[in-house]
Length: 174
Ligand code: GDP
Image (tube, rainbow, N blue to C red; front, side, top):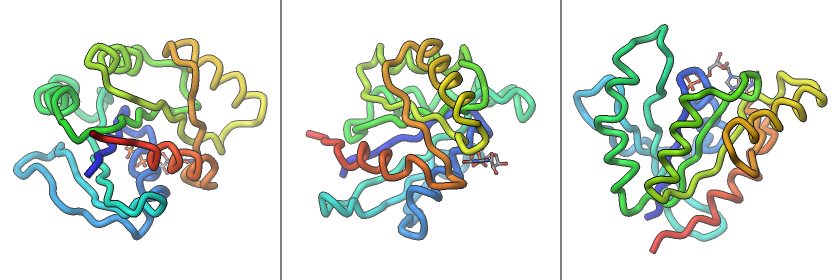
């Protein structure tokens, strides 16, 4: 069963995006016990390929206001998961379209490249931007993060949700 990991800084809009993608189709199947910041796994049906797919909701990182320990704690179980998980087919990396490129996100993408992971970068909350701001911010994010493509989405208006699903359904795992 292919797994899709969702990553991003705290407050980026990850829970909202997961709800928009999965809706009531999502069934929580398991989580790493005994941790407040666990990886939560959700099993879903991939309608186009008629297979099961698993979403892995990773703890948010880099939000100093919540806890300093999150960034320090994060790599301990997340990095091994991201580097070694055989069934992991795609990392969906979330960045906020309202915020300039963040060093922590750029570092994460560099690290994913270094461990040869496929990833797609998603820009959240695009409903908050005017057309001009959106064009400008997306260009700044592509440049700042060193990527050719970014998928703009809004959990509020459902913009980009179909496009993201298409990317997820195209994932293959050998
Ligand atoms: P998480 O911490 O990454 O899981 O982020 P949440 O999904 O809890 O969202 C953080 C905040 O951003 C909340 O106040 C949400 O209402 C807001 N938010 C999330 N997605 C969107 C969106 O698509 N549009 C707008 N306008 N706000 C959003």
